[in-house]
Image 1 (cartoon, rainbow, N blue to C red):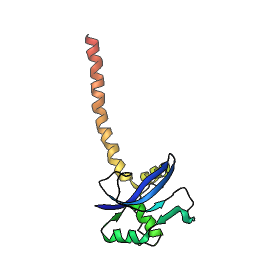
Image 2 (cartoon, rainbow, N blue to C red; image 1 turned 45 degrees about the vertical axis):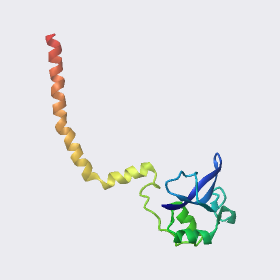
Image 3 (cartoon, rainbow, N blue to C red; image 1 turned 90 degrees about the vertical axis):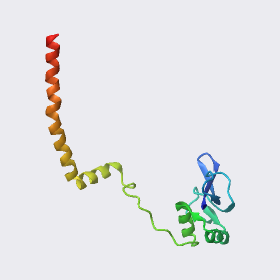
Amino acid sequence: MLKIRLSRGGTKKRPVYKVVIADSRRARDGRFIEKVGFFNPLLPKDKKERVGLEAERIKYWLGEGAQPTTRVARILGENKIIPMPVNGSNPKKAIPKKERKKEGDEATPAVTAPKAEAPKAEAPKAEAPKTEAPKAEETK
């Protein structure tokens, strides 16, 4: 299966990506069929040097059945080559962890109630062996 994806280049902590057509089974930075653009995430979004694409070649490969990855689909959508993809569901990832716990406590009080009852039933069982253990020590 053909993919339109990013291939990483550049140096450590200074990435520059090539937009390539590659077989999905190949390594990310491995062999590819054709380079159809570049993407530099370090530049501001308003700079035209941030993204360079060969629109005609990309349209050709889309016609041949190549599927863009999610990030490449966003880049292509921003450049009006394909319709802008809908935002994927990213539930609760943008919410800080402390606030997520607060929301989770409010949403699931019924779920925590049965769990609270179960340990109460187990607590007497745990106490019974404790009382038996000292008796064994006393007989020795």
